[in-house]
Image (tube, rainbow, N blue to C red; front, side, top):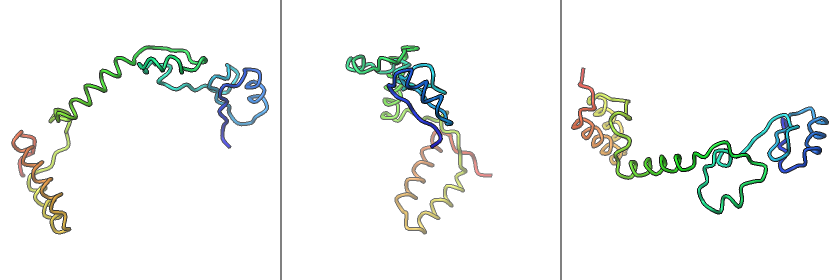
Length: 138
C-alpha cells in the first residue's frame, strides 16, 4: 500500500491514522490533519448545475468558484460544432500529407483489402484539396 484515503472520517481519527502510518494519508472530509487533501473538482468548481446536486454536495466541500455555467456553455458549443462538422476546421487540422502520399496510402490500403478505408482517405484528401489544405507535390 502506498497511501490511504480517509473519507468522511472525524479529524481526531484522521490525525491518529496519519501519525500511526508510515505512508501518506489523503483526506476527503477528514479534516486538516492528513498528509494531503483531495476534492472532486466538480464540487469545488461549482460545475454541477442540476438542482439535485446542491442536495448531494458533501458538507465538507468548499466551493472555490462557480464555473459550471461557463463549462456547460463551452461543452454545448463544442458539441454543436462537432455535430455540424464546423469543428475541427482547417486551422485545427494542422497535419498535412502530400497528394502523392495519399495515393500511395490509398493503394496500400486497397492491397490489404481495405477498399472502404482507401475510399475514405481519397475522399478526405479530395475535400482538403478543394479547400486548399493539401501541400503541392514536390
